[in-house]
Image 1 (tube, rainbow, N blue to C red):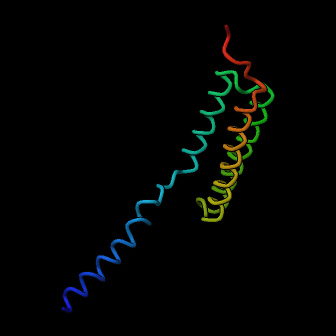
Image 2: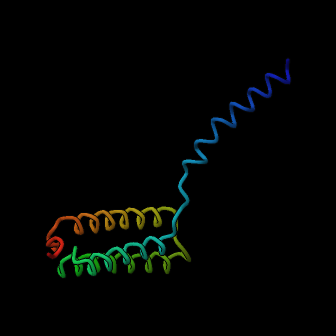
Image 3: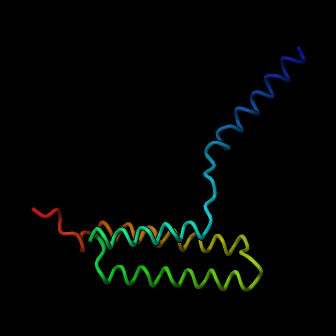
Length: 113
């Protein structure tokens, strides 16, 4: 009886832990995320979905984030948790802004016929 109770308790714990482990997305480094942002800006320029002004503004914001990252890395021998969180938030905002700018139809005039 005791074995069955322990087995049921163990299964309950394992079942509760599985969704958390499966749903945890792998962490992506700041450099990888910056590369994705840069690719999206380049793609927006090539496709014509970003105007020249939008691209210049997005690249300027991208450079500011890269400079901030360099300052963070120089100040303490790497990125602290709060610095990484700050950079992640800034990159998230830039990605959202890039996505918005690409879909606001200012630079894209539809397929040519």
